[in-house]
Figure 1: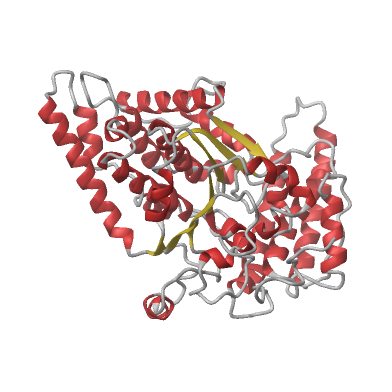
Figure 2: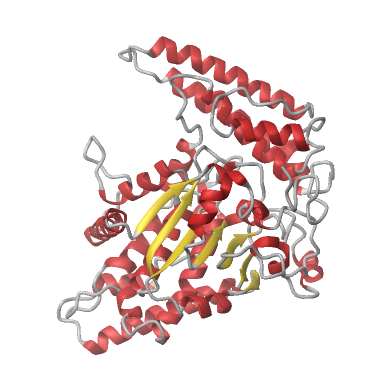
Length: 506
């Protein structure tokens, strides 16, 4: 197969674990072995918790022991920089992975290959261990971690649910969001809310389980304070009575705007390159368009992605939002189709023992969660929201190959029908720019190759957007002097997740 770019011919020198001063080296040396060990622990706990009443318990236990053996061997290979080996399972992508290994990495290993390939290879190898079984084929060893961190997000989840659903206008029963966008796409309220929602979606990416070896739930909550906080606006919304006057309503709306403006200003200087104005100029021209969101993390980030998608629908910009999820457990916390539906269910459906995943004591908050879950479920039921998945998203290839790789042909042809592609998170960013050692001043449109606006732009690619908090060495689109300034401010600014970029290619 001849490709314009390949792992052997990237646009710049790729990031690699061979550089001991890189985050790639830290990942291979420290982070990935911990993730592998936690995966083994999860399988061990799960099979030891199988009920005696399960008629297949012994078979599942034997398979689980084999899975643990395979994953344990994976840790051994990683820590000793062993050569890559081909895949032995029968998943539909196994042949493509083996072709890539043969063509690009026939004598390579974890540290010698590009960091991007090595990290993707690890998660595909974890999937292999389960795919070779009969009873564990669809098991997600990361689900419990996703669930725990989402549970810890209750305060922020409830706060946003109240603002999105609780009526503050006694006459129309409209929520705060509906009031803000009621004057149409060109109104100040719609525009201001857009920039709020962009930051909500952006900073939702700050929590990433693949970076949290031992998730500090207090830190998770602190990160979520960058979103819509449970400040004065919630109190005003909750206390608005049916007898509230129009004047009082105006005061509530103004208070809400001022509160969020001040919250956003606190973090504006952490967005090192901000193309959100360019994005707004595109979005405001849409009427009932299609927006594709290539998802990153499950849990709270997925929730705020729902919030942003809900805004696009309510404001009239989108009548179809297509969410792209992963088909296999990926980078610990990435969204799979099951996670998508499970998240919706937790907002409004009691469990088998008639309890709820979130348990706010305030009746208004309980009602807000249920109303929001039902509204979002209605979007799914009527086709306004769609969730899909494709093997390409968990392949070893960067997104340069989306328009040309044979295995991505059907995906690309479908995505060409979209008006806007929004890529969420760090891994999607790395795949957009081929995870290379670009100078930080390289324009984003250049760094994404065929998806950018250069001479080699693929036909049919709409505006490409990336919402990304920085968790890897590669960053592009920065103005002159920003890198030097940040090196003095925070030595780990490229990988800490405390800083971000919003990048747009027209």
